[in-house]
Image 1 (spheres, each protein chain N blue to C red):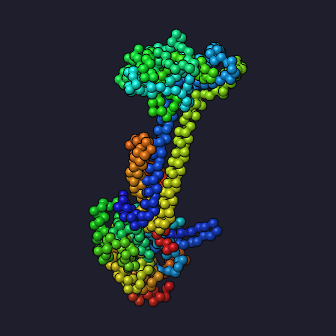
Image 2: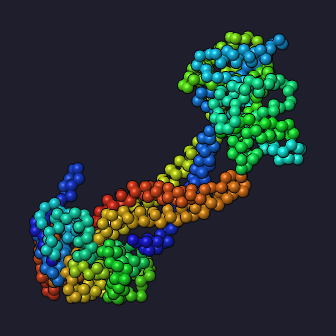
Image 3: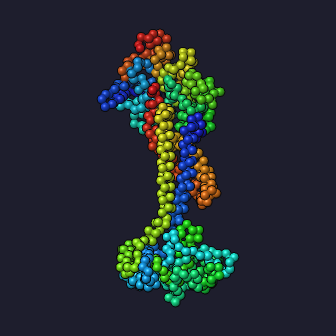
Amino acid sequence: MLSMKNVSRIYRTDVVQTHALRNLSLEVEAGEFVALVGPSGSGKTTFLNIAGLLETFDDGSYQLDGRDVAGLNDNDRSRLRNEKIGFIFQSFNLIPELNIADNIDVPLRYRGFAARERKRRVDRVLEVVGLGGRKKHLPSQLSGGQQQRVAIARALAGDPGFLLADEPTGNLDSSTAAGVMELINEIHRNGATIIMVTHDLELAARAERIVRLSDGQVVLLDEGGEGSELENGAAV
Amino acid sequence: MEIGPILRAMTRNKIGAILIALQIAFTMTVVVNAYFMIEERMRLMERPSGVVEDQLFHISTRGFTPDFNGKVSVQDDLALLRQTPGIVDAVAINAIPLSGGGWSMSLQVEPGDGEQGHGVAIYMVDDHGLDTLGVELIAGRDFTPADVRERGPATSDWPDKAIISEATVKALWADANPLEVVGRTAYINDDEPVTIIGVVEKLQAPWNGWTTVEQSMLVPDKLIWTGVRYMVRTEPGRRDEMMPIVEELLARSNNQRIVRAPESMAETRARSYALDSGLAKILGVIMAMLVSITSLGIVGLASFSVRRRTKQIGIRRALGAKKRDILRYFLVENFMITTLGVVLGAVMTVGFNVWLVQALNFPKIDWLYVPIGMLALWLIGIIAVLGPARRATAVPPAVATRTV
């Protein structure tokens, strides 16, 4: 599903160069659930941005679902992002002026679906996340956990097959976070490929594989699950 | 098109949008009515007077000595002017078109005190009048020397012949054509008969604001007064050159009178319409200021909106919006605000004009101005929002993952 080879990203200002990613190589198979951990400044967000086609890279190669994305223009990247990738953000990133249904509808409109199809998909994903009765509510009328469920519904609505989750439970209390993680696990069990950035080692341990970044490079790969090195906190 | 979500989003954050829509409506109301007024003024100002203005100037003299002989003076002056190289013709005349000062009388088709009269401006000229003014005779004949009589300050009766403008024909005999009225009799001063011997296509009265400004009459009276005004027609292109020459010629030819500075018909026209011209300029400046302020308002609202929604734009980009989707979003949003403004503006424009018609006797606005005004404000709205909308498209999708 995702294949990065020797990807580098350098942020330049007039006086300083910052190597956010250094020759990073990573393979993620279709249907895998990978957790990405690492300290602040390790390059997690840059990796997420590049993997999600939100920004470009300076060197190396990146194939998404078999397609080389290096030479794509802005329109092609937008289309690929819309069709292949679902985003789940730490701060939910719902549009405050739009109700729940309209929020979920946003990527579907950019996809060009007809109104009836969009409505069908909105209704379906709201049922999946258990918020079928909240279509007309504004984000501000929902709890944090509910908002993240809406964000997950928005990510799922286009059937992307590849989910990028950036600290999906970072803004939630533990009981709410558990519910959201259970939902993400369920999505994974249904066949989605997931890369989840997290600081929470317990959550990371739920992934099939754990990747640790440090200084823009992959420094540790772990199979995750019970008894793993990361579960015991040794690698972070 | 995201009309539904944009509309729903706007209703939750509507103060700015409503204020801009009201500003657009107010601007449209003032601009359309002001533009209509300017056009009306321009239309009035562009009306031809009927005389060859670019070849004409007028100059007046007044005798001041006890033994000043007006009759001799006029004869000598006209003889001098008519033989001066560069001058086509000259005539003593009682009034100047567009000058604001002159005579008018009532002309009627039947004699009698109670008959309906039609106001006409009176121009007293000799047999050189038509040639000097350059008016076009479309029926009948010009005055001959035999038609011309002398008119002194004490003369109160009227000559028995006249040449009238075509507009006067229509006023007196509504369905008649100019050829038919030659030889007909009209009555001046209730019961003095005047035979119409000719019709000129156009000759405006001296008063541009007069409702019957196109109604005029030339009578064959040669003025024998101490104060007299000459209309002088020069060869084409020589008017400005001849004005000081004529002034000096007249001043030198007779030292028993004063000669006032000549004035070209172009200057007379400019003076005549100075108020209209000034009003049109003021209205133009007000229009430009209002349009500028409204455009800046739209730019300001859109710029503020882009800044306020930078994160949202990034989220939309992350979710698959192309740059053109972002551009379209802001254009559609602005189009909806502008549409509200121009629809409201159309109602206000008509309402304001109805008030102007009823309260100030303004002309009724041509309905075409309303859709044209709406279209213009729409275009201004789109142009104004283009800059901020293009800046919005530059927001990168990676903004979505930034936490600050």
